[in-house]
Figure 1 (tube, helix red, strand yellow):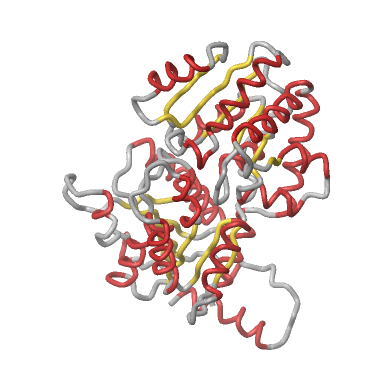
Figure 2: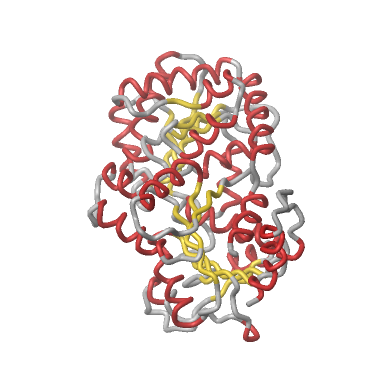
Length: 415
């Protein structure tokens, strides 16, 4: 298999006792990568957005990238093509469910076989297992872990599977993978802890998403928008209740007027109901609820129009929307209970940056809302200074990690 041949030199390097770092990844280029996903444009949020950035970066590193999806629009195909990714659609009747389609053989062109097969958690992990076992046995299977279901599901309003059962399934899918990849420090610690008590000794590496290539906003926009972007249906998980309460406090303080509270992530068809519900309780708030926009370009535009992005999650595997805000140079207030918040706390030596970007959301709602409101007010009192701090944070994160570095580590780990 190509990846094994490409890595022979790396293995000899390690066995020789040479401790010098390997920075030349040229021999690891031109691998065939197959990622299994439920969609290309991220209609369902973070995991799909992550997969798109992952495929894009694999392609930029000169690998041949394919993404198996149940269906794709013309716009999705064009977007993928621009990023150097070929979308593969299973040739099955349209009545088949998404999950069933992903278990059909990926229609790889010209008899190409994948060197790497990627599955994402319990969402596409089982389909990736099936692709390898039934069709591409020589491929190396990489299982990405995005969330820690033991905690996440306990905070959800509706849980269809017992959290402990969900974690058992996640471990089952991960255990026999050629490589387990954990997203950020929080998931890495949790998954490492689970496997420490097991007889199996799988290979696990941590993947830290980096800055996303986009134009940075250097000066505050004319209008003031405070943005919450996340699944409103997962109110407690995403801390939506904290964000709304905090915005009410900010409105009462009259720090800046007018302030728009933009909410992206309302379930389809429920925006009016949410608007009426919140308006009854918070009549003075200028609320702009909207369903989640699947177009990643428009999501980034919404972020860039904002004066501050709020991510007060009570539990968050990583928090890619926060990294998108940092990439765009927009002030971010994130939860310490997110992987991204923990990542920032671990790398920055700038105490003011750390303090003004990260809050604790383990206390009661009123206390958390008060802290979040205080940080929002701090941003709005001097937006020019807040955008300068956001630029500093951007530069710190850029030096610490990148998508390219994380992918190169992944490929090297497949020995």
